Image (cartoon, rainbow, N blue to C red; front, side, top):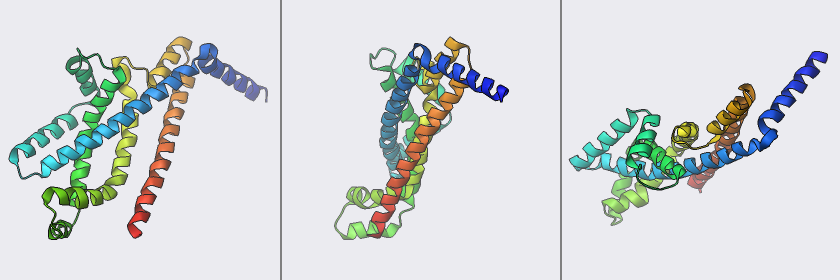
Length: 232
């Protein structure tokens, strides 16, 4: 019992040192805000870019096919941290935008390459009869794609889009390379200030786990709602 009590007391002292003393927990709270902002903007941008690239890859125009393939090959063939640093230190070097926004753009561009493949597969999975039905109703090709094909494709690919969002949140842990204090970087600051590794790292891991668990539950409810709407 004495050993357990001593271990518990030591753990409590380490917790106080890492998170309570000098209000170090505020670093993590700020990091959560940065991570959420970057992830939300990046996923919206990634969906927009992904849809555009998917439509280009399915287009009958050869130039659009080539450009979409170059984009996906380059983005998927290079590390996300390299892309982030190129976009931040080269592309936007002279632009005075908030750091988090530039990082969100970088992650959105990266995500768009993967989302485009998800959209492409989803659109191609829709039966050709749906397109013919749209044409029979007097819709042109673009209207059929917007009002009939894409809505059905989104329902089919929703789980894959959710997985991409979850992956994106974890990938944002590299934004410390451009001077942003996200969850991971906040944990690193605490580790450097206290010379304690266990508590800051475990705390960081728990925060990521809780965020992703909450997101998973929310997206799961949204998916169930979409499935129920199909039966009504």
